[in-house]
Image (cartoon, rainbow over all chains, first blue to last red; front, side, top):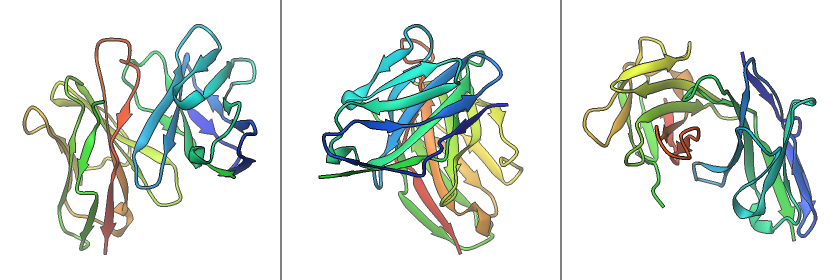
Length: 115
Length: 116
């Protein structure tokens, strides 16, 4: 079984400040981890993923995430948030042994960036 | 950049009616998925589809649901007799089977289904 927890329903940050969105996971095999972002009336847009290799992965729009195996975490970060980063962010996990298997999503974290 | 598209964006139907939600996956992707998100809840997996057959389905995907790839571009989800609890946002996704992005699922904008 696999599961994802996003402990914060909402994160508020001032523009220019660092942004962190937390995610912890549980999976029986090797974790394949993903972050997606959803803007209003839009679909889930892929941001970045961790499959293997370097624990720090970089993605679109200046976002990065750090895979921490001992803490089973995959927190999303951005050094300097923009107002346009305000959106709903989803963490997802899949068992790496299943090449095209289903994604298990977290509940989502609403990010609000104020000017 | 190629995108997954879905139609309609919003579908309103009466309980007991059949609905068909349509998706056009990214060209040359061969793995297809349907997920749904009931308002205020998590995005949930429904079904995956490859080579004209279901690869995996969740317990939600009962006999009222079916999927089909009627031609080379469309991928459909049919709900035979809708229930109130089927009201949700339905997302289609596709994934390539070769190249650097084989492990990534790309999502469409969703169809909001409202069952009255």
